[in-house]
Image (cartoon, rainbow, N blue to C red; front, side):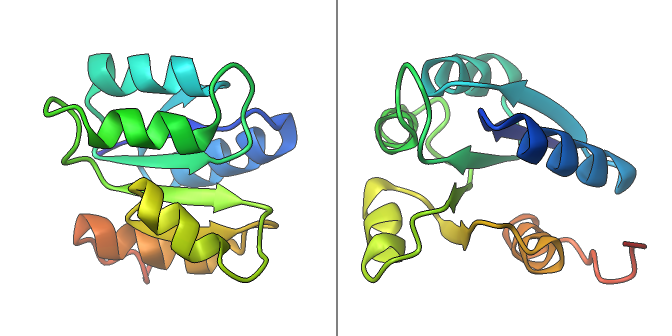
Length: 127
C-alpha cells in the first residue's frame, strides 16, 4: 500500500517515512501542497498524510482541490497539524480531510488511524 506524505518539516518527514516504511508501506513524498496535489494524481496513493501548514499551496487548499477532483477524491486524507486549538479539527474535516492528528505526532495513534482508514490491522507491528 502506498502513502503520500505531504510534509515540509525535514524531521517529521524523516521520522514518518522511516517508521511507515518499516511497516511495509511504500512512501511518496511531497514538500509543498502543489507538489502534493500533482503526486496524488500521478501516484494514486491509498492514503494521504497532509501537513496543513505548507509552502506554495497550504494543506487546506491542497485538500480542497483533491476532494473536488473525481480522479482522487476517494483517497482518504489525514490532516497533520500543529494547530490544536478549539475548532481546528472541525476546520480540517470541513476542508475535506477524513481524519485529524495533531503534532507532535503520536505515532501509535496515527498508525491506528491509518489502519482504520485502510481497513488494516496494524496493531501487531513492532514499534
